[in-house]
Amino acid sequence: MGRLDGKVAIVTGAARGQGEAEARRFAAEGARVVLADVLDDVKAVADDIGSDAIALTLDVTDEDGWSSAVGAALDRFERIDILVNNAAIYRADSPLVDTALADYRALIEINQIGVFLGMRAVAPVMVERGGGSIVNVSSLDGLMGHAGAIAYVSSKFAVRGMTKVAALELGPAGVRVNSIHPGVIDTPMIAGFVDRFPVRRIPAQRLGRPDDVASLALFLASDESSFCTGAEFVVDGGHSAGLGFPI
Image (cartoon, rainbow, N blue to C red; front, side, top):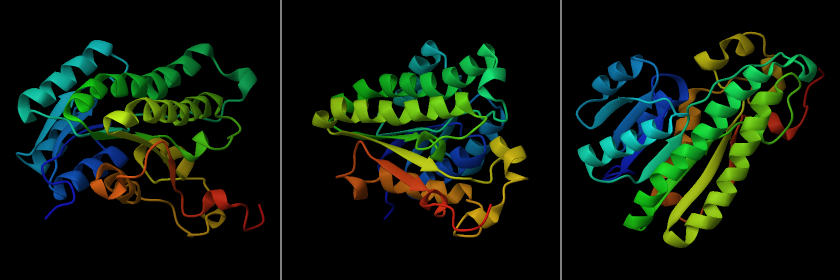
């Protein structure tokens, strides 16, 4: 018996990296999965998963696109139990005074507003069914500062705050909302950053893998976390514990 048997999940940013790992893990645990992304690669991932998966082209900043995605999920699977707001972009190495407004807004639109639109789109469906789980992927940068990444940090702190508000508002209807805060995960999105990151700073002595995040997302999506809502869950190999090695 799978941990998500009978459930339907929407996963954004599912063409690669953490989103792909989450979609594959959910399907392996019995869920039917809607994989959403702006990248065409998402179709190949859904095809590889099989008949219990469909791919949708979704720009998470598009309000009408979210309405269409929710409609497509309901048309195909008749319910939505899980939303993983995973889609994001990362840009760093730009000091505050050198950060262009257009670049700042781009991260806010995708990383923050995309999460807001996703939660708002699925909440009525989950409330009507009497339950559901929303998992918002924030970052370690949603718990602490990161010099040179003011836009990314701002967006990920916002995800953390929105998660708490949604948990307060939706909890009485049986909908749980939690945030995941990954540390340095080896994905294409942060390839340039990963290449120069000193792994010895991480107590686990390795970079995170997409499956590490997918395992936590699975727990939060499943009934095993039925008493967890409005909370932050860190998956960082101990990175945020402190500086255990000389810089």
